[in-house]
Length: 372
Image 1: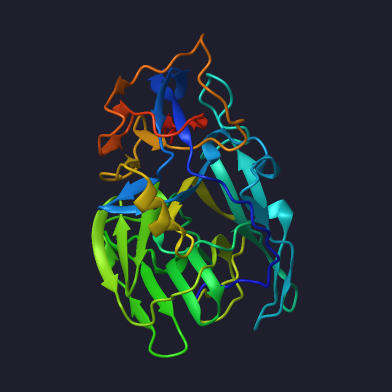
Image 2: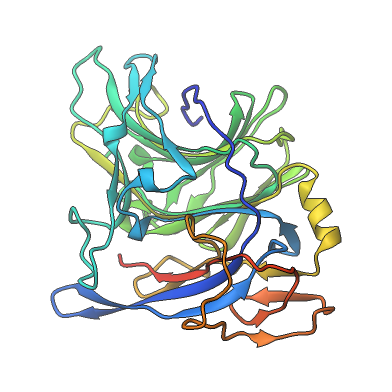
């Protein structure tokens, strides 16, 4: 199971935004660097986000390729405390969550290596000493039914567990976990662990992935609905789990850890890094989603990942944290097609825009090319 510590969280509610869009387009130049170009168009998402025909009212998105300091993102907090374990106690430390963004138009990351947010397990560790690990938690604790996804590159150094999971408590948990020691050079596949924890019967499936998680970024995803959690990898549906499905709101967590037990093995003999390129969460908060759907007639369609997350591939973001609510400026006008105010429509990427409120709320919908 994913190891979590007791954490404090605050609620920072955000209504679904009207969106503008910037596009970071990258091309490879000699020497392995990249050139980025930016452009903007607009879309409107005030009524929410559509995934597989289901509408969600809220969103949390993080573009870690362009985040200089995680403290500048108000959606997340870093865990920073000890967690007693055996045979090695663990300690989540802020120093192990490191921003490694792209630098300007060069395409190079700040610290070298993969760009994105690094979650580091430190090594070596003396017997009995704390294993220094990393964890990132959403400040919001009201994440409910929804679609949750992250582009992650795991490590192949044995002795750690990397996880993306939803968490309420030890008996209400939805996990995606990879164990580094299970990646074998002698095999072309690697297992991934899909787990539901509950007070009653739990569910645990371990399908084989047709790739090594350490060899590139892949999108890991679960869609949580009443009575079912559907798991996806790179946009492909892999498995449904139906035993012990949670029915309360909670938080989304990313962590990278080791305690030397039979689950993680290790601890590692050197520093081990898991890198996250982006996180996207589209979700409801209890009955709020159903009320919003009755009042609205237009939503943004969330586009699915189609295959591995590759260099020069575009990924769409429908929000930009920190942008003030405002109308599009005259110098950067909306360029989307208009539709009837009374029409029922789904905004596909940046394809349509319709007026649905007296005052529009504008945030960024970003298409960001992953530089891997």
